[in-house]
Figure 1 (cartoon, rainbow, N blue to C red):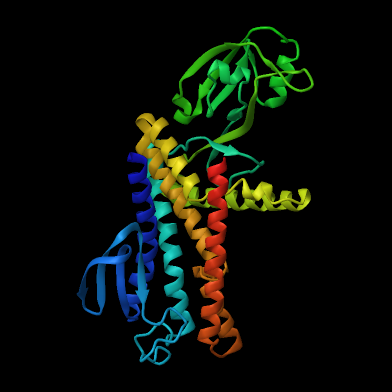
Figure 2 (figure 1 turned 180 degrees about the vertical axis):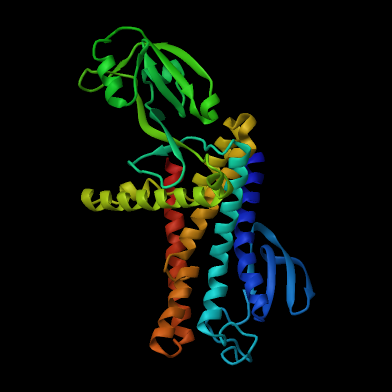
Length: 378
């Protein structure tokens, strides 16, 4: 129940911050906001203040803003194309400002939360998995080369109690920095007990260290293995006065640039392997997000608040990125129509645009269903 409540709260914060961007910019430009809703309809209660109805709705998932003339369909009895208070009657610049304000607010939220998280953590991040080699533009990097990301069922590692998020530092007092080092050390350890020194990197530099004893498993070729999947992880520290003062912005940039770089490489892998598996396995829907929140709450320990705030910041950046994509029904798709209109020098048919956005909504809903099924299966 706690996970569900936190999940709803995080979702609501992200959506309401996004919608507040549309709301405030529309109001500032004199565009009529018909309704600002907390939650999704049906409406439980509402109060009109000025031209806007402020409502509380039954479904506790985020919120919404209804702007006069934003939907490109014709409204019976209302000439939204010429009403000065209508979104549709405004200049392309005004419409772009309103449409882009939600993404802007999500970026602002991420920058603020990253700063709070870093200030609470001595301006040093927790360890970030590095699935591809990448050089971060800001901050000093500290890399650990053999962090457990998953564990094979019935393996020596599972039986010994090795956990995801622990780094393998030594085997029989011999330092190991990557998977190659581990294979080299284990070559002569067939049917032999080994002592594995581990460090819990979820707690950063202060993470607990422990030693487990195990007999390595054998892979299909008869080679001794621990039975874990490993990746490099990096921690970033912002040390100079300028870095600390702007650490929220710098870290938001680092995370976004790394995510875009990784996503591009995953797409390349998909083309090379002629399968969508690399991309599909890297994305999560509501079920995957719910599971991550549950893990943060269960294993966060005394850093649970920091980890939750960090997660909200990451989700806010992700929401901004997805919404700015030039796909129908998303803010980026609507902005694309405005740009096309500006280039053409004349309005696009409201009915045509509405139909394109409806197709986009159906596509996005179908994609969410497929991702959710994938998350449930996993």
